[in-house]
Amino acid sequence: MKNKILRGKILDNETRCAHYHMEIDRIAIKFYCCDTYYPCYQCHDEDGCGKPAVWPKDQFDKKAILCGGCGHELTISEYLNCKSECPACLAEFNPGCSLHRDLYFET
Image: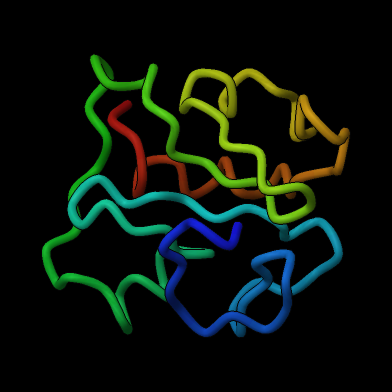
């Protein structure tokens, strides 16, 4: 993660933030609008570019999800199909993130 631009109210080295900080909250999402990783949409709302935009479907092959456990970058398609687990280190991701999918990705 050291080479990635990560912003927001980050609480620890697994990308947990002030808004989402359970054990399984360990991803950051690169926002399409500003090409910067944030732990959540609220962090982006507070500290982002001010012009939120979702990833278009034709770009789901781009790496835009960062595992806070190991630093592995997943494509959007990999993330959406990973069953809430990092394919590299097997760390669990929060399945509840799917409730906010429309804030990050075109549906």
